[in-house]
Image (cartoon, rainbow, N blue to C red; front, side):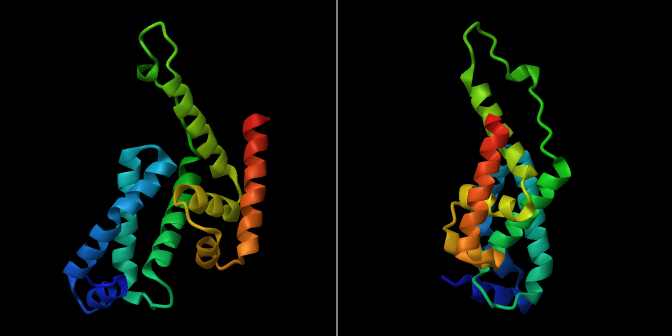
Length: 173
């Protein structure tokens, strides 16, 4: 199996099949990340598609200074940040989400809490928001987050800690 860098080199010399293989290799991870952020499979599909369109344009200039996954994580995080800024996380409870029986439907409450959490994440400063998304949604270690964002491991940990404190204050306050 070819490495990501080999596929990118082939793509840079004109092989569309190499780009298609690169997409197939990473599409599930990208889609899963956006589902965690948006909680909406349709929005996640759109964001995934947008990301791969951007990659199609920009991979011609890829410099091979880092692993492709580092580049991809950074692109995902930037796309998610843009989406959060654009949408300001407007969530509405639709009537079709309310349980019809007399029993309380705790799934709606759990979904609402998740949306409330991601709404609060959208309000964080950009660096803190990026660290939280990479740590929680992508489950990346601090070392990888630091490399992707070009900061120290300590700075990544501090940003995560400050973000968690803000989130706890906003949600519990």
